[in-house]
Image (cartoon, rainbow, N blue to C red; front, side, top):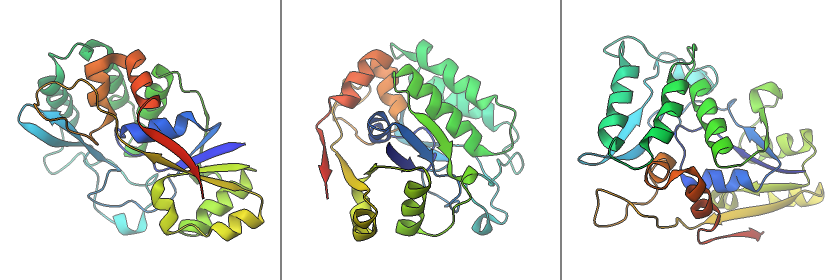
Length: 239
């Protein structure tokens, strides 16, 4: 069993889809603490005036005690019409792009999900984007697994629970994974060292990397996007 584990970030970057495509099981890490001002409820796009953030507003009340799965969307304090504003921003930024009509309905459907938890929208988007990219892993949420612990212990326990043979980690895993424990358990750890590919990008003279993957989708469409994501300058290395 080849698995990878990652938080359900909002409109993730290309590297996440590359990593998911190499796994048989994607464990959605929604049981860890929500982190304010990170990529969990927001990401970067190329707007009409350059790089800008687009986000799902979340309630800050008690966020230090809540997991990603438990963190609610904020519909107050000026956020009452956030969905309309969000979709207007996407439209203004990408309506003239060649694949806007292919990508926009996916965003609209996800935002209209009847939920009070922002991660439900994120997960719906990740799954539908994977389908469009012909990436078909099995999915499970860490909140369903009754696992606790932090960092390496948490990842190791998840791998043991789902009977992983190979764990695909991001490059930052080198900084915190206790590799000896994985080796003793017979779990091979591989690091997905992903160098961001360059693709045809409108509205800029110099290529802007590490944006949300929707920038690629809007520019190139899903079929070509898969080729770019998978044929980018990347390699998978053993520890």
